[in-house]
Amino acid sequence: MKRLNLLFIGFGIVGRGLAELLLEKEGMLKSRFDLEVKTVGICDLRWGTIVNDDGINLSKALKLVNSGKALTNYDSPAKRDLTSLEAIRETTSNVVVEATWTNIETGEPGLTHIREALKLGKHVATTNKGPIALAYKELISLAKVKGAQLRFEGTVMSGTPTFNLKWSCLAAAEVRRIVGILNGTTNFILTEMEKGLSYEEALHNAQELGYAEADPTLDVDGWDAAIKAVILANVLMDGNLSLKDVKRRGIRGISLEEVLSPIKQGCRLKLLVEVRRERSDIVAKVDLTPVPTTSILAGVSGPLNAMVMETDVLGDVTIIGPGAGRRPTGYALLNDILEISKHL
Image (tube, rainbow, N blue to C red; front, side, top):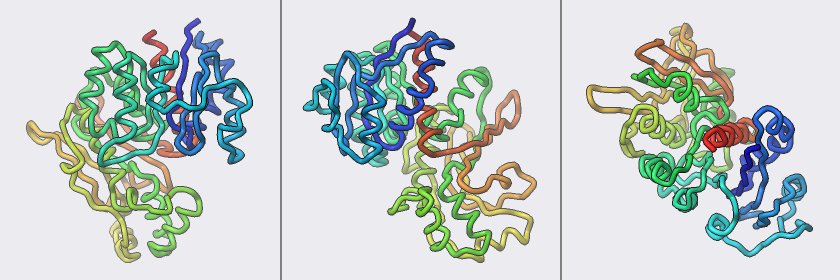
């Protein structure tokens, strides 16, 4: 039986989503994949740290944090005084799950966590967009040198398969263009405004439902979509883009008339990401675009994500699914862990 020792760096919504799935699917992982997964540590800035190479009781840790209690209340043997970097270095973990917050300017602290894990030959599964957007080629090169796997399925469309689809099913196909709705928050707001709500009312609804943060800047100003454009360009199309290379327009303050007017022309207004080859260059943009109702993308409403990959062999390949959420993003990490296990 294959055995993985997991270290969680970050135990927020996403990390706990993975933890719940590991408990739920423990039997299936053993019977179907001959895989045993043990958690040897959890490090979280808010909830604290517990580390034990003999294993952490994941169910007990989940119950504590889900009830709002810090991991200092964990009543089984564990070290509690390690920093995240110390835990990466000192535990017997062979997979580091990096699920801290995204910093679009520096990629930290996730970038340092991932670098350190890979330097030690430890595999990494992450949902953190910052390090992949800012340092993908450096990190993937380091992983190859150290014989480690770097997986990041959840960075663009959460649990909806994007990179694994390309690498496994479209491995011999060239991606010429990508266009998609890659931010569920803004798509939800635009959908609500089509019902006659103002921008402010639609944003409030998104915040009430948990689709938008109290500070929605990354979503409504197009930053989240732009960083996903960079990842897609560099990973799937071998680009060398940075965030400043992406032409970007968000939806902040958009008027009701701007949203409703395209409907009269048989279109729906969408915030689209586009990445395409232009001669020898890769170019990317995020822009508000009227999409004809005959297009698949026009039919994508609410918080759903969708992406169309234009390929040289199969033409357009379309993916539609949830682009955020505790369970879908947790599943992305679980899938990354399964992919890592295949290479053991």
